[in-house]
Amino acid sequence: MKTKTLKKNKVNVITLGCSKNIFDSEVMMSQLKANNFDVHHENNDGDSSTVIINTCGFIENAKQESIDTILDWANAKKNGQVDKVMVTGCLSERYKNDLAGEIPEIDAWFGTRELPRLLKTLKADYKHELVGERLLTTPIHYAYFKIAEGCDRPCAFCAIPLMRGKHVSTSMEQLVNNAKSLAKNGTKELILIAQDLTYYGLDIYKKRNLSELLDRLADVEGIDWIRLQYAYPSGFPMDILDAMNRHDNVCKYLDMPLQHATTSMLTAMKRGITREKTDQLIDAIRQKVPNIALRTTLITGFPGETDDDHEEMLNWIQQKRFDRLGCFTYSHEENTSAYALKDDVPAAVKQSRANEIMGLQSGISLELNQAKIGSTHKVLFDRVEGDYFIGRTQYDSPEVDNEVLVHHEEGHARIGDFAEVLITDAEEFDLFGKIV
Image 1 (tube, one colour):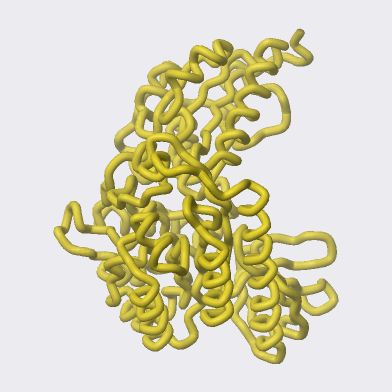
Image 2 (cartoon, one colour):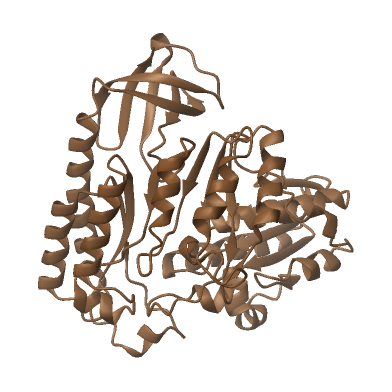
């Protein structure tokens, strides 16, 4: 039974998964708002008549979270707490035919590139004049900035091309206009995202063109930081680093998922690179931009991974001393080329190896952070929690990296503003300081 009156034009958008999904939700919300819907992101008022769930389908844990969320809202619909439930995003793209039969309470299922059809189902128009417009779900001072969709890479473990399709770059003209629009509204940091940033431009400019895009975005008035996430190591365009050195507002930060350390595993994963070439690339990047912060992501437990592979990866992590590192356990995804291999590393072993990797990285991070004590850094403040103003240096992306905490007795910060902070203490993943 309904517990309160539902507002007929009120839409609640739920976003699961990565920053690319956040971007897509923001675009969808902008279109809904332009069609006079009262649109909210992850609203808890309980009076929305329509819920749209933007799902993730990348690995098993993400898929399960998406399914659990869909089931929760299907039950809410049964109980009269919502009138309509619609599902979009990666999980829906990949499994909508299967799920539609199993969860009949859902009113409609949409793929990753079906926003116009979703709007039409809600009797709304897709407004072409709004291309590039978004209703930000992040604090106004930073925004995820998608420069391309899809991926042409053949990685054995990855289902993203099944869900997102082939790589399609957005034109530089449109991206610069989008950046100007964001800057006018108060955005200071652009976090460039794509399935593969380094492929940018190959489809429309017939060359890797990320460095030129960086040059043009760096000239946009009001943009103080530009951050690069999701760079691919094979065929890495070194001129990106020249752009970093040319522009103070291109952060000395690079997120480059390397996935593994041994040539045998990299070959099995179809990464198009060897351990030797990976090491050469890392060394070349650090030589060209000596103070760069390198973030990477690794996969443990890929089919055929041995104890020796794992030990080599641990030794490699110790040698390379990444500034930031995350680790996933391998997920056996149907319709990927790795699905033909036997998933022969037990789940407990996968998790044990991941725990070892993150334990090692925790110690490295503590050492690197303690070396910053006594130095001063430009910090962008994101929020207040309890007695602390919480922000980030140029070496940290929101949600996934280190943070800088300033106690209110050590200075006052305005959210969305920069301040110089003297680092006075450090933990594994946090810096503490005072405003100078």
